[in-house]
Amino acid sequence: MSLPPFANEPVLELRRATERAKLAVAMGELRLPLKVGVWIGDERRFGDELVSTDPSDPQRVVAVAARATPDEAGAAVAVARTAFGGWAATPAPQRAAALLRAAAWMRERRAELAALALRECGKPWAEADADVCEAIDFLEFYARGAIELDAGPELLQVPGERNRLHYAPRGVCAVIAPWNFPLAIPMGMAAAALATGNTVVLKPAEQAPGCGLRVVEALRAGGVPAGAIALLPGEGDAGAALARHPGVATIAFTGSGPVGLELLRTAAELAPGARQLKRVVAEMGGKNCVIVDADADLDEAVPGIVASAFGYAGQKCSAASRVLVHEAVHDVLVERLAGAVQALQVGPPDDFASDVPPMIERSAQERVLRYAERAAQEGTLVTDARELPPAGWYAAPVVATGLPADSDVLRDEIFGPLLTVEAVRDVDDACDRVDALPVALTGALFARNPRTVARVVARSPVGNLYVNRSTTGAMVGRQPFGGNRLSGTGTKAGGGDYLLHFVEPRVVTENTLRHGLVV
Ligand SMILES: NC(=O)c1ccc[n+]([C@@H]2O[C@H](COP(=O)([O-])OP(=O)(O)OC[C@H]3O[C@@H](n4cnc5c(N)ncnc54)[C@H](O)[C@@H]3O)[C@@H](O)[C@H]2O)c1
View: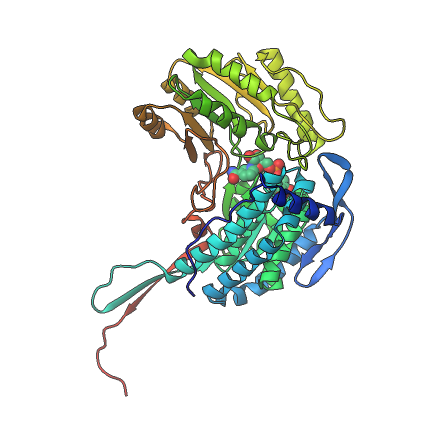
């Protein structure tokens, strides 16, 4: 099977009125609420225990879903185990072809899928479109990667011996996904597991069961057998029951740190009679810092920081939350940031003019407001209060300065539109503060001197460091993505090594010397 080289799916050019009109039509045609069942093999059980609503208009119901029980988690794993042999034995190019057809299915429904992500997760159009593109990218990228991996690496050969290494799938993979990239992240984890011959049970985030349904539909429409991909809508308890199941070989998780740690603990508990160690692929949160040196081009730094901190209302794991700026330019940067943030428009995601959409849910809105109050008490807010849309889980974008070094606001992942700014003596002082954090996901540096850049690169512990650009928007194949320290198990989604998490290496050594001929 020969495929053209991987290329990222181009995002829509939303400056064109024709593109915007197509999206508006798709939104008009979206029929809500979606009914999302527990979907195991060919069986579906519908229910109305889980309801996902539009964050910008919580009266609007986007999806009504069944909540999977622990028994259903067990049934899903049993079916996935039965299907494993057949899917694992399917030649890698055929598995890849199924993923490529799933990508084509998504491409055909691009506008509709973006509209759903917008409604269910409050993603503005550009971000929702990028989410669809990233899901397509994962399918295309891992399909190619799995074919390459299947060939195995070259080993040293000596006369009389043949050595081969091949990668075998591990078994059933539990995919547990967050809501903030409701199509791309579950699709990425599921596609990697499937491409390498594992079977998958997907537990989408409780805030995004509708998007989870579309992920499974795409894979099945592409030709992934019904037994090889199940949908288990539910809350955390459904994810916990799935992860605990002794039939699960791999847990692919993206979400918050505490849940990731719990899953690592779960994996370490051997079930009676267990014959395989569970592997955990965990991608978790961060506290992402932007260092600004005295010689930085502030015309580049200000929009870069604003996009990093306030795009999708700061609800990206890669979002910037702390600026560490050289004291010589602190005041001017703060003034310019305050002005830029004041000009941001807070509003519904389907309004092309909105810059800052709502938070995903009421509890997220309350969390951000709590931290903003704390920041106002402990430091200074340099952005003014503003009126917010009456309905929806909106939080005003905030910039805070002058916080004490031990403030929780400087340490916790707030996951909302709150940015802090601290003056530092120099970039080494900034690097010390970054190094003091237990998390290490993304970071950025704005500086002109190449020696400064080299020094910060050498000292930076983060998984993804961006120089003179924003901290968000990693592209499959271009910026393999994932964090270090407590931000994750060091995986790199969208990179060449990612598939290795889903396989086990097996080496076969054959004696090829013959001591006589048997006839
Ligand atoms: N590193 C990355 O690539 C990356 C990407 C996106 C989001 N994130 C992180 O995800 C978090 C936001 O997402 P979230 O709010 O959906 O995270 P979350 O941890 O609350 O939930 C993630 C998933 O885990 C499930 N879950 C919850 N409790 C569980 C349990 N005890 N056992 C098993 N599963 C359980 C949830 O139902 C959901 O499906 C942030 O911390 C963000 O930084 C990280």
